[in-house]
Length: 127
Image (cartoon, rainbow, N blue to C red):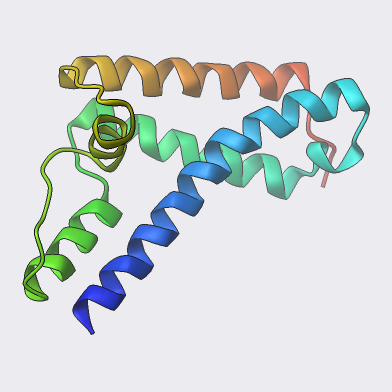
């Protein structure tokens, strides 16, 4: 049961990352394609809040709670656990990419800055 729950947390984590990354891509494409839905204040607020949490955690040196929960569930289920952040782990697994923590802080911060710039370039509509 613990391993099933850990896999569910992993899926949730992947969906969160996809929301943050693909959200920005869709905002930018939506600007060019005149998609009105990318200006939805609810979408935009949740999107900027999501990357804001990631940036804050990286600056504060906090491991993502989803990573912590997944690892705790895997450990309880007798499975292997990994160290570092979720993104760091999967980048190293998928791309064989390893870097110091400050690189991830910089990447998260720059991506957060892009999302903030998109807020002004593709203004959300009013509530």
